[in-house]
Figure 1 (cartoon, rainbow, N blue to C red):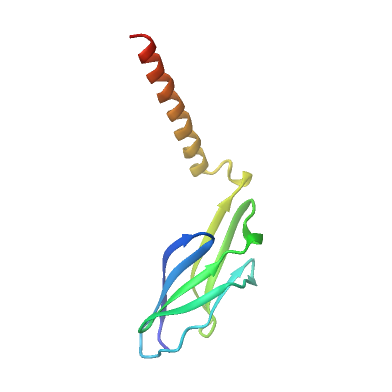
Figure 2 (cartoon, one colour):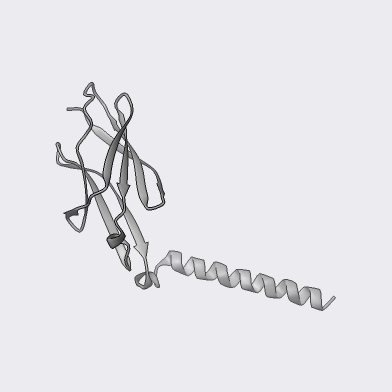
Length: 124
């Protein structure tokens, strides 16, 4: 069996997508499992794209959207090896996260810019 590689292409409208490619001659679609907290999830599709390549689509279940960090593990079932993963981050658990801090700083900077521009216009 050839080696599989997985490349993320996008996440849109609650569906994570990636491109699966196999080195070698085998044309059979790979068997992929996606787990969250060691439990398999449904809504996983492997769609033929071109010779030796498939589009992997993973519908993120609504139950997985919650506060904190949710990590999905993508595995090749036949070879029992990890191909990749993706993570969702949400909620109050991330208040101390650096990205949340940067977003807050951006919002405050925008507010200060508006106030400064208004001040400049009023003092002219």
